[in-house]
Amino acid sequence: MSLHPDSKILIIGSGVFGLSTALWLARSGYRRITVFDMQDTGWKGYAPGAGIKSASADINKIVRFSYGNEIEYQRLASQAAEIWDGWNQEIASLAEAELPEVLRKGERKLWHKCGFLRMGAGDEFADTELQTLRNMEIEGIRDTQFKSDDDNDIERAARTGWAHKLDVCSRQERFGVHKAVLDSSAGFVVAYKACAWAQHLARKAGVEFILHPTNGKVVGIDTTADHKPVLRTADGKTHEGDLVVVAGGGWTAGLLPEAVGLIETTAGSVATIQIPHDRPDLWDRFSPENFPVVTWGMKEGKDIYSFPRDENGVIKIGFRKIKWTSYGNVAGERISAPSAEENIPVPALEEYISLNLPELAELGLSSTWLCWYTDSIDNSFVVDFVPGRPRVAICSGGSGHGFKFLPILGREVVKVLEGNGDQTVYGKMWKWRTSTAKERNGLEEGEEGPRVLDKQRMASREDWVF
Ligand SMILES: Cc1cc2nc3c(=O)[nH]c(=O)nc-3n(C[C@H](O)[C@H](O)[C@H](O)COP(=O)(O)OP(=O)(O)OC[C@H]3O[C@@H](n4cnc5c(N)ncnc54)[C@H](O)[C@@H]3O)c2cc1C
Image 1 (cartoon, rainbow, N blue to C red):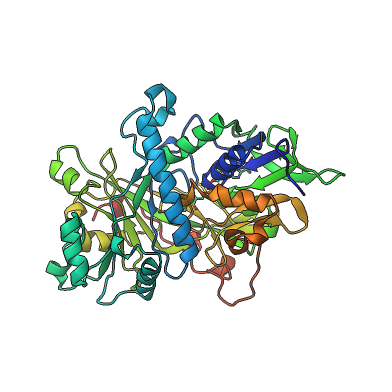
Image 2 (image 1 turned 120 degrees about the horizontal axis):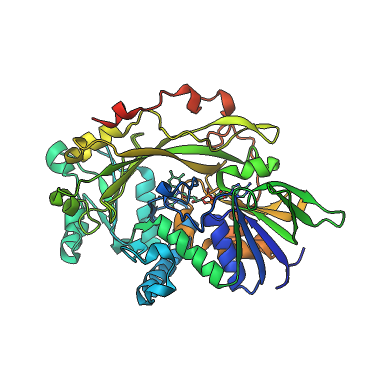
């Protein structure tokens, strides 16, 4: 199919994938774009406390450039960072009335380049770490990285004001070993403000949003006799378009049964620690000025990450090693889909906190939740037309690393939707694909696998205290 500026484009989902697609379509000259969402991300915003459940609705997300041997993602992340810089500047320059509500109060900054410290739990660097450094070399940005055992890097860190973030957990002093790389170009974005900003920009560019538990909830995608796609919404209405883009995050496979086997919905365990207001020492220690984003023990199977405190004194910590599944009946299929479960399995966070952030152990956790990934068979995104449905496209498979691309993802999605995916690096990477490999990123486990949430002991409030 060929698109023209008056093509009617219907996007399902107002998370990162739907927002970025809508924004870039509108800025590319498409005039009739509607985004549907069953959750009111317009009125409620994207803060997890506001009741929106999606991967994008979160406190903060990591922006990293370290991608092992996947240099294409490294490059795309660098291009995204330029736009994150631009968004920070644009927001700072605008009058309050020109900003979305959530950016009128508190900090206006979306993107914090506080650094990203990737700490090992043992005495060796992970291979991916060394590969990342080689790729940074190739791109001429190696000097943004500081390797903890490299004298030149240590000297450069001291000279450029990064030395205080090289070993924030005093691992060398306390354990006699500290294998880490500090990326001074990376950091985090304030996720809920960033999504609200992108939605605001999309609205300004002419995108229409229908965000409502019935009017905005798509319950089926049909096809007319002349092959046009039609959305059925929960209010009983139908919406005919020229093109439908399914960017439904963890709900995508429920709308597109063809995608079962290519993507799977899994849950990440997330927790927070609230720093009390009468502890200025901790507010200071864990501020983005003094504390970077930290990951710990990827090579050693720990795989935990934490953020500096946010403007409300909240530190977010996540466990990434095991992504949980939650199987149920969805549209006649047994698939893993987001559930309403609020608790996380008894967390592996205690070891990280007591070893690396002992001063926080006495505070315990202040909240937990499950955040729903959409993993693909190879952790790469999936952006393509659905086989056999030339006017229905999938835009999903964020696989736990899609957020940082919010400002740029849509640029590449538009090329795919315009039929040029086969000529672009990312179009080829994100093509619809299948695999018969024995290991497919855990998708091969299915309902019998060990990661099923029903098989876990879920944490209760007693487990929040260490
Ligand atoms: C725990 C966790 C940590 C992560 N950390 C990072 C990180 O540090 N850095 C990073 O870059 N990325 C990270 N990611 C990945 C990133 O968050 C995701 O790639 C991205 O947010 C996915 O966006 P999405 O639009 O695909 O899905 P979502 O954000 O889930 O949005 C999907 C939207 O579709 C709507 N929807 C679904 N079905 C329907 C329907 N039938 N009708 C109407 N609306 C519907 C939903 O209501 C929802 O709003 C993380 C993800 C998780 C889960």
